[in-house]
Length: 148
Image 1 (tube, rainbow, N blue to C red):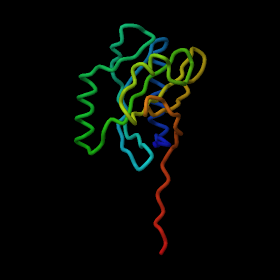
Image 2: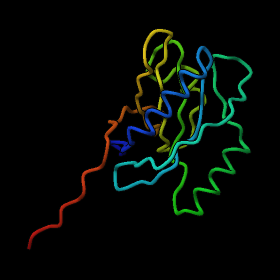
Image 3: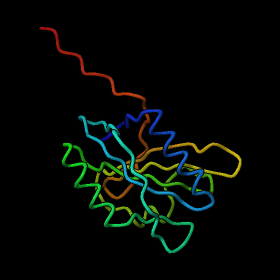
């Protein structure tokens, strides 16, 4: 089970800035990275066009998803998840998020935005039909070699 996401301050700021820019609508994008045992590491975030028909939803353009997935694979990485903002200020998966989630072990970063506060990020992994909250960390601890 995935327990944490290592994501730099610069990537966190980029997501928060996108949420502010899109407010009162929702921003969205994809997170590129790697999986290291039970942890995820974000190496890049890619803002994408929100093609949803209503301002209180997000939908990533499928063509952009495929293009970014192919580009990530060329660097021995993959798309580990997505991010989007909740302009209602709630940093938890919405009913719409639950209805649209389907990829196992897929990361969801939510930027809880509001008119008067800096967006706060929270992270979840979708698995076995539910969202589980995971920790956001600056870096992953390195595994220590066993002493013999």
